[in-house]
Length: 207
Image (cartoon, rainbow, N blue to C red; front, side, top):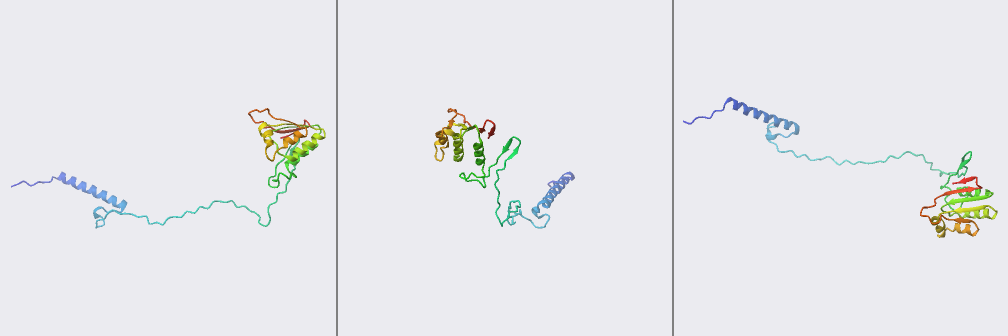
């Protein structure tokens, strides 16, 4: 008669422990995911749950921040031109007005007009170091000063001064030299003679 296999109490305890651990793991997985492995908790076997994103797309609208500016609509903004210098003792500062003075043929109220006033007021000399020149009205004022005995001299750059004077719309240096005004360049140096200052009567510097 064959012998029956018996399970010891120790082996039975191990089997119960393993089953308990497996049951605990399945319970924790069900609590976290809602998936009942083998239908142990819901009573019916379940398959892997596929979750589809059914939320509608979110439209994001960007509205840039614009500061509120009160702009009158009944009349345009008018800026009155002025050439009153900012001065303190021995110096004065003049500002351009490109909004109201953008026509090169109109010099009234411009910085160019103030420069011509200094030329007309010169008594003995106007000595200039400036690397370019294209102002007809200023050239005419210098010629008039030369004719009344003022010593007018000019040092300029060769490339941006005398060579550029041959371009269309230029020729102001030629006007000065034809009137007997001495104009010299920087003798062909590679560096640009970039000075921009005028000396009136050896006392007033315009720059």
